[in-house]
Amino acid sequence: MTDKEGDLVMKKGVVAVLSMVTGALVGAGAAAKQTSKKANKQKEYADKHLALYLLMNQWVKVKQENKSIEEYCLKKGYREIAIYGMNYVGETLLNELSGSEVKVKYGIDRNAGGIYADISVITPDDKMPEVDAVIVTPITFFDEIEGLLSQRIDCPIISIEDILYEI
Image 1: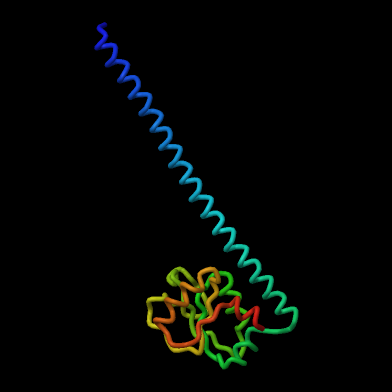
Image 2: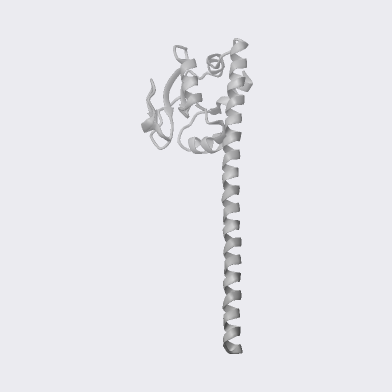
């Protein structure tokens, strides 16, 4: 083997090693980025569930003080409302207002087609019948939902969280 051939083999070897190292570093960086995204997603999920736990805890305190969302609504003049978010909190609100003087006219939910309730459930894109107020139950997304609804309906848009802490 000539010196020239030896230099070429050595250069190819160095390039191969550098390529492997670079690939490993890029792969490690991508894995770290993926892990970071996953950790952020898990934190968002945990924060959301903590907020829901605290909300439901406040609701229990309100009930223990013999106060109600019905009284709040009637005091504000809300006799016909819509509920945005028909998951657990929305279902609980619907149950609490069932048989009361506050009529839940309809529910609003992005997944309206897959929700079965005692009221009609529409999507945020559907035409919204007139109501006195919309109560929003997905509290961690309230600002976003309020922005969307305020363009679609002309009535107060209130977070269930605000109601429960104001009662």
